[in-house]
Length: 222
Image 1 (spheres, one colour):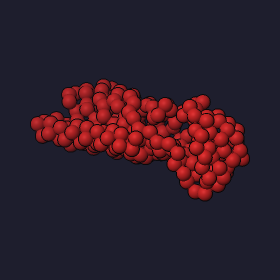
Image 2 (image 1 turned 60 degrees about the vertical axis):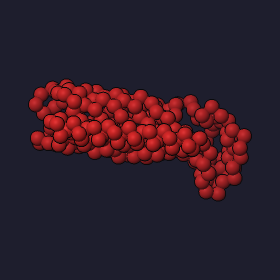
Image 3 (image 1 turned 45 degrees about the vertical axis):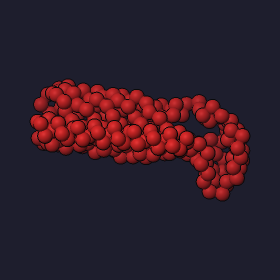
Image 4 (image 1 turned 90 degrees about the vertical axis):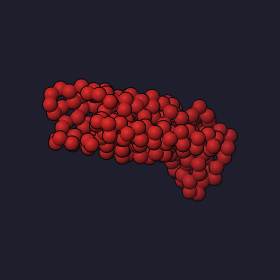
């Protein structure tokens, strides 16, 4: 399983490298390349994947991102990017039972179950439409490549899918990797010839959980 995760991650990194390298090559032939640095507030919709009593959910996190893009023509751009690691958690008090990822768990613990993503990668297209000389609106779509680790922390006992854990710190109990479609919409404002600021909404999925977020970003053209 770990080999599969590493293979998927390496494939995403290689694809990102090839995309950004081709962007740089095309830019020397007259295209416009750009780099966007942003901050995301992301929220995971855990829905009914968790059940039980004595549960408090922290389903939001703030992460950074870097995107490299190449403008193919007036409206269309190709983009590749990285999104920093994020975490959501579910805090438990006392004892109880429920289900997570379709498997049964039980607990007698004061602690938390955490889902933490590693650095994620994006590859996609962006279509922009100018409103006037300074304001653009845009839509985007592509693939999000992700890895996520699940762990439980605290003091007590925790059983997941028939395996028991005696807690005195942190214990990892599951992991997953994959890719999902992302879509987004946004607007940008040109501050100078080579600098823009933007606000964006994005929606995707990570291991069956819907994830959406809002970002503020600055873009530098080359």
